[in-house]
Image 1 (cartoon, rainbow, N blue to C red):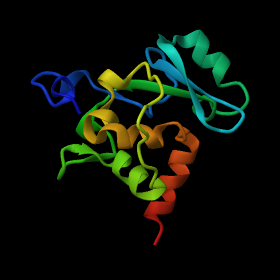
Image 2 (cartoon, helix red, strand yellow; image 1 turned 90 degrees about the horizontal axis):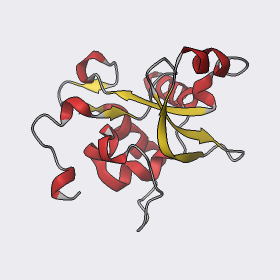
Image 3 (cartoon, one colour; image 1 turned 30 degrees about the horizontal axis):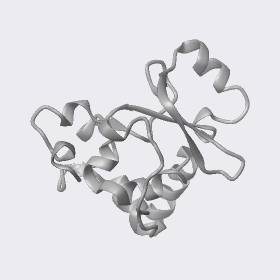
Image 4 (cartoon, rainbow, N blue to C red; image 1 turned 60 degrees about the horizontal axis):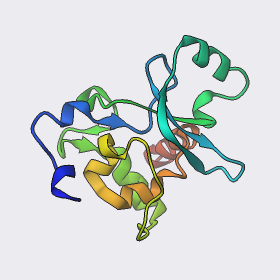
Length: 145
């Protein structure tokens, strides 16, 4: 990470969770393509109630789109109090084991992304395959005895 991307006072409060729900005010930043990977938008789009209602017709919106929203840190069940960090990105990296490529795809939220702030390019290497429904299944699998 560059010095400007490292932890800065006050910056933690403005970080975005890249695995957010479809709800008014969320930032749409990617679309699931035919291969099931994420194609990133050039700029995030703030969604409203009309979008959410239309997107929920059929499959859950989180299975077709990627949304970002304010990281609520210890208000989220993915937050690790011990590490003071998002535990989900660590589990994804451990499970998927993808390494970062020399150049990353353009991402409209990277400068404010919680996962990137924590794990840098390695987090980005996993991100284009994360669809929230699969994430929930993945989390359930990790919790199973």
